[in-house]
Image (cartoon, rainbow over all chains, first blue to last red; front, side):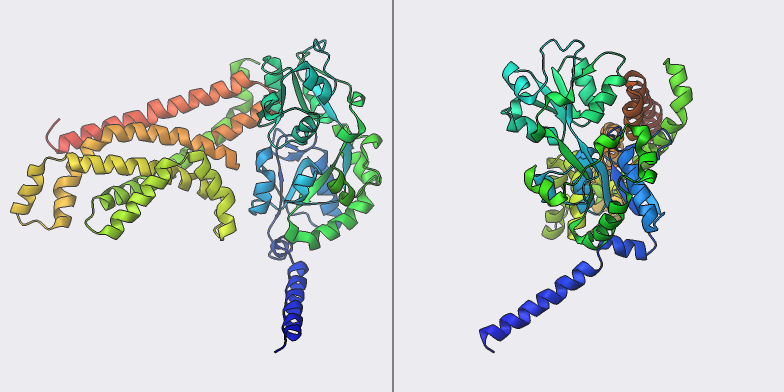
Length: 280
Length: 221
């Protein structure tokens, strides 16, 4: 056979295989088999966390459950794990949807398919009461030579490095509980995460730490959060995005997320995931 | 919050976590003992294939950290097609890891049995299987019991790591409670005490009872 015919056959086989692959991802197979949709999250209050009874709480969980309900699915199982294990666990098939409240970053987009943005959030810092070192921005922390503590796999690590900090200046701990403990114990001068999380930590710390003003930080540090899916579940993700477009900003949603501090300012606006993946 | 209020509020969660820990402990112990016996005896075998497999198993599982093995079995094996549920992944990793240490204990204990016993069994025309089962292993068992007691306590502490793969054991519950209430002293203090109680009042007396029973049977009591 000539090269061009072989190429044609190979190309049509590849096209056929890829069409079949897109047709039904592992999540759709699970649903057809009657198994529960597993949502994976860590302990990020108020994004997604487990409440006292072990149920899925937080606004990302509330939105995901609302959208899945609108799509007609109510067999949902909550899996709580460590933040750093969310993307690996998704890809290893330990759960099907990551609702941790992950910011859409280029590095994460390479490993996980994000839904369209569900919220826009800035960063925040917790510091000792009175902010003795006057730390308000990543550049300020870098210039003051202060120690910054943040969580493993957080988007803040990249933001800090973009401001010039090195690995030696950034202390990494598993999550918000440890970030608070580090700042309270004086092991770090500032703790960082999303503004939501830091404000919640400051509010529950009985005055041991205070949160800085989020508007002091530049536009580039504002992030968009998305819900994560495996690349193979693109079919489910397309349906999810369609339902999300109807759900976002609706009364049903705003009622569900109000208790977590989600306001009209947090709505993601018009940014698409494609834009955010390229610009974060 | 005082420790009593804390225990009243969160006692049921801690108890449920403790049950998971105890279940993981027993299942991991069974795996550890089985692997240790097989690998320990295998390492003494004349057959090069059996000896090779035992040595490879011992070297890999003793030479790498338990946490890395746990993550590997949980996150990486699914890419090779082996997806274990998290509970099974937990006790398997801990069991395999401790089993590799136990294999060396088994091997050392068998080699410690006086050479005279082997010769006497040979003189009595016992088959190798009979010799191992009736003469050598019972004596080796008594020799290896004290270090096994240590190893089982290590195993109990190793099961705490399964909290990192979302198994809802004692450590997981303690971290959960700490994560939502920030009562670190009470949460982790209770977990500490519970692990100590399990080690000191469950494992240690049982091992001592085993040693006494075996010594009695060997008329060394």
